[in-house]
Length: 118
Image (tube, rainbow, N blue to C red; front, side, top):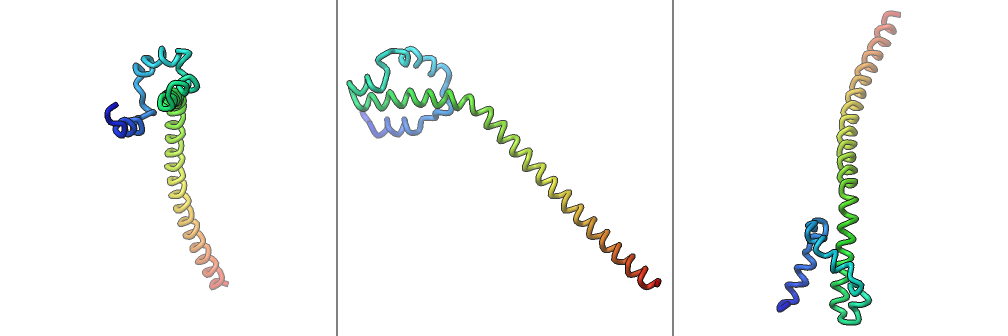
């Protein structure tokens, strides 16, 4: 770790949404060790404790993200479908309003014709 800034930048740029399964599998033995806790790491190094916390939390986040992602995609698709149908409904409403206006104009003409006839 000759360049701490580069290390911090790479940690910040890490994509927690897309962690390869082999990486998570490789971390399981380490994460199952009794010493791999934030409290134990604090006894050794504050930096190690923060890194331990980051690893635990990013793996936990990824696990939750993978469960929620299909639900979110489904919700997004449903939202897009609803917006499409609302747009179609607005087109139909506009057309109905045009037809109603024409019907009203014809009723008015009929009323005027009946009035002249009387």
